[in-house]
Image: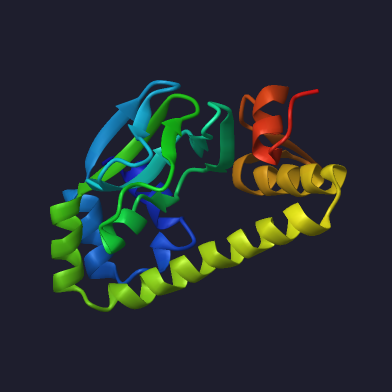
Length: 193
């Protein structure tokens, strides 16, 4: 990794707070993976084979319904680590992970991940905190789905996207993702119309 790439990961709110020894080991062991837009990182119902950190670009998480309609859960920005759920519970992947744009990942194999946890049991506490953050976000999303209007949900998603993918220019913020109306509709669970 370049110094700038290492710093990008250290600036991550969760990863940057990890103890230095395991954090540095992750950065030393993980391999770079470059993806083109639309390239699949992993597919729903496949075994968990690696843990990933986003160095550049964005990953979208989603899945297809029984009728083939696409559902979009979220967009993950730079600095976020993902794919650990299936490494902990040894169940298949719960969703698809796809590069939303040209994306660079760090990848650590499942065996390396297990070894890291064996060497640094203190990491379990940090993963519990991460999983609690994700649970809170899921409950907030469920609450929004059941208690808020479509306009309110759209506003909430736009704020979330601006926080994770926003580029500031004075008081203005531009979401640094190509988001056609169809993707926004999938994110909200509605049709484009």
